[in-house]
Length: 639
Image (cartoon, rainbow, N blue to C red; front, side, top):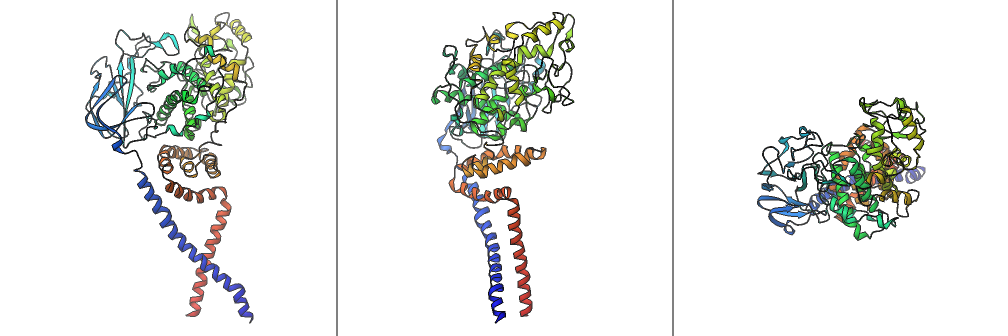
């Protein structure tokens, strides 16, 4: 009787549990094979055909954009991106370009395939000159001539040159009293895709051979503030900047010798001014419909810059040449909720002038040596070449930080009597004044954390709030009157005097700063990089929201374990390069989205509850081993 009771109370439940475990593991394997890998693979393959039909695209033998015509050897499907640029579904052969590219000096109307060039030299026009002959920045070997066989992934950038009489006569964008140095009038881009895309697709960056596609329908336009203009009479029209940003800004020559002069500045400081005006204009209470075009054009510029960054090109500090490239990327990243763009500083350090040229003085090596600058400032100008992300000067001395020294000890550039304090001169003339609007735009979008370089914002505050009257007098005294920064356009606390007489609404940045720098804008906060942002393209597409707890868990794992080491950062770069394509497939197919979501649950639970998952796995494994041993003992006993 005792034996029977023991068997019923102990052995029978154990046998039942082991049987259930064996059945579970067998069925689990079958389930994973039949309902996980096979369906996901099937739907990915099927969904890869979920593009606009070829039949919806017009077959054309040529395309014309802004005065440039490409002629093909046969009719090909032609489509347009959201910004108006054209694409063809390749492969295709271009048999003629009009106006035709020159085949000898001065090599006008050049076409270049797949920027950036390996040596960063231009192939558009050899007449490069900024007051001295800079033609050594031209390389004719990068030019291409019809017939040009193009395949999916290619971007053909074609140009129209200025005539000789027009050279150095076009007014510089944002400073009409200066002239643009480039011999190139305008540029158009022909992109070759492997398949059609929807009409709201942005053109992939002309530097991006993997052709990441972003979509206007994904723009979070409600993140743009809607503030009253503080000075309506001195507020520019959106149309002015739409006309400048509508066409491609080509930004792959270190000194902008070959920009399209009709609509793009040829100096980094002026690019930063243009960015500032766009960002602040889009922060005003224009209607959402009125903001659409300029927002699209500016996001396209950010996409272009980010693609060039991914291709190995960057804009490290060099006086006033390298400002203005980070803000469009971050702006685009915020509106697209694109994590790599928002994390651009972490993924690509030492690539932006604004960040390399602003530094807390206690970070200068040896760290902690300096607590304040000669005039008491805690955040200082990083010098002509700036500092690395860890505060180490790129080139100490003449081209590095200097405000830790007294003015009498600042290194001088040139030979007597033609010498200048290179650092202080560029700090006041060519850099700081153009960063104010960028910093204010990010503040209005509540994106200081996303920018991920606090010294930049503190430096902008210093420029606008610090009274430099005593400092200017002290510099003059310590240098025996040789260096005088008392002119209004050289003084801190303003941006307008650098633009006065050069741009009609020259007080706009100052007006916006005085009205809104101290105000926390009443609109939804932009999601922060690495904390409440998009995190994972695939997970966000699967779970439907970047704020879903499962997406947050994956993002936190990335921040804690991947972005903190070089191997992890490389993995993240690769993931961000290819995952947008898969995410778009997932979003477009509900069944695929459900399958991917189910497949991600185990990964998320392992990240969130690693001990519990390990314990559960251990119990299952122990049960299976025990069951096998038990079964073997029973078989041996029966034998």
